[in-house]
Image (cartoon, rainbow, N blue to C red; front, side, top):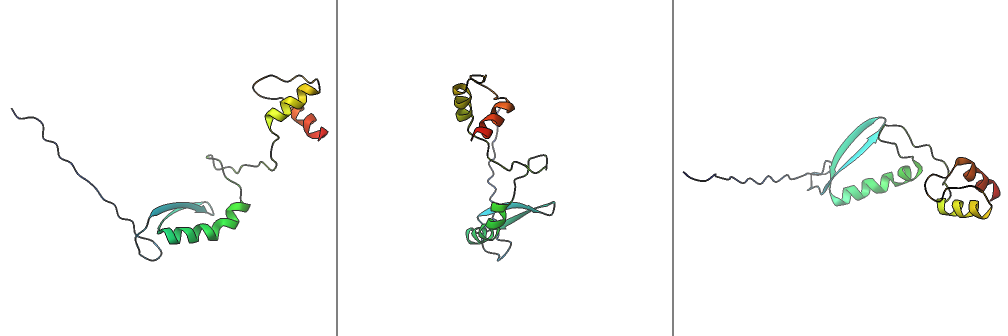
Length: 111
């Protein structure tokens, strides 16, 4: 009885730039008006797309996986700084874990 026969197969996928037909180096996913798109682009055209979208990406908000926009409008203070401030000001604050909202509010008010 003969042993098993193994067959190897190599699949090569060649991407072509959807703008100019040249060889593409990557597929870029993006969305607009609730519709998701993918486009295959060369390195040059991918750079041009990123350059064109840069001001909009910079000004925009990321969306969560659920599709809702993140609404954070301010940067939260560093938790270690808040914790140290609270301890120095005789406020009860856990050594680890979540810092109560009232402690953050007091820290912000004191700044």
